[in-house]
Image (cartoon, rainbow, N blue to C red):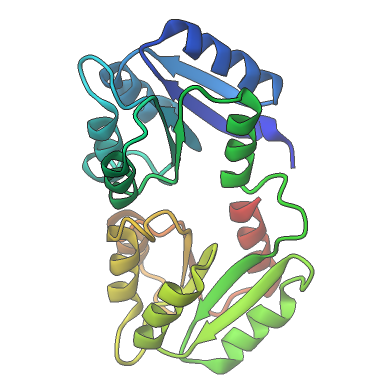
Length: 254
């Protein structure tokens, strides 16, 4: 997988630091766009649609917290999928770390820092350079044959498959297993896929997990609800071609 497919946004009011990050990220093969404050960064983020954002906390106009909040909640409908976020700041306070985690930030790096450490964190969050670590797929479907079909066709050296047979158990599975991707049926007992997908995408701890919806419903309205209202990453009608589904999983996870 080539790094150049990924878009990185860097937002910091320190021009020298901005240039340092931009130069080194481009050397690593990424497309990079930068901004000197949160307001400019937010405007560019909507257009550029980055896969990952590196942002300072203390900036004029709009600070890092408000910037992150806008991306994750206020403007999430326009920025999809939601990018990974790295906070880069001189503030090494427990309170700031706690707030960042609660908002849904993926990593918190304090200044001064080694540029190599930042690059490695970017790679790790984008699923690169993580040799030997399998991606975990959660398949939540009340039809055990569907789960078996999907899990047996995932390459065992690349993926680990975990399963649940209804939405309630699926919710517990997500909390305990923390999957990298979720394949979710819409119509299930105890808790529907609609309900579970809404929970996933509105919870900061799980909002960035890609979700593929499986359903027998093929109407345009249902697809719209799934991908726009529920913010699912893919919508696959049943019956489906297993090879096409595996390709979608591989494309999303990289």
